[in-house]
Length: 338
Image 1: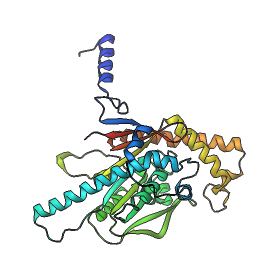
Image 2: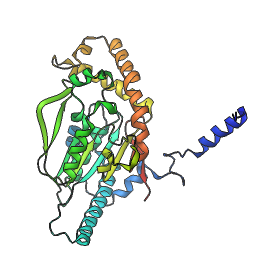
Image 3: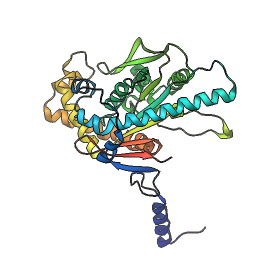
Image 4: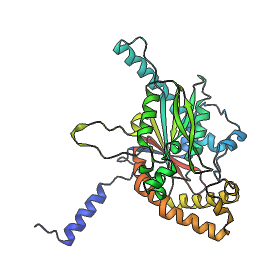
């Protein structure tokens, strides 16, 4: 048996570490180009601001400080970039239709995936994008779906003894997600998606959201860039992201996300948790110290583990990364090189 000396073992570790590329550096080896928020804002060009502050306030999530200035700095440039991608996709569709000599081809929707940790602000980003994209001069039909509705019902999670792993990859009905996206990409009419209630913390029975041939679909969720093990023999295993035309990852240091998660929990304790019908109503009756301890425990035992094991490893698969700073606003943007 060839046993390596401690020095050789260390040399091997150092070599492996040297081969790891810093995805966020934006240097020559990184697959991304990196821009400061101010640099990114310059790419807005003449893209008009079509949202008001009241609308931004309505669209943002609890504890998210995004305002009209942040829309100007970050989201107008992103809207312009996405417009160019949609136009390119439509042009390619026309060229391929001509190449295949197809006379009545169905145009497939442009699907944008939005990923990131809980409490990082991906829901706000998804809603802002939906509104901006729908106000392009061409007035495209834009819909938004979140993966929450595709979570397994609580009774099924309890049956499988994974209720405490809600939000982890195994807690989703991945087959239902793939069937939904496949139908959307096929241009089918009236595709149904399940609906989730954050009040009762469960999927709603017999209630669906109907999506009918949108021009653009924003698909948001923590694990939408997740991959799975490949089977032997070259058999096809579609990933959710296989259906995406563009993907965005909302990023921040995990210490900041933890802080935002706890702050949001404490705000919910004073608002939504006060509703007797809320699944988390019991937390509203705790003292502030007790509630904070619960929030810290939930982050450490569930959300932080999911972030490091399943969500953060998918970040390098995104086309664009919005990197947030301590004020919850975007401080840098990383765009995948072509």
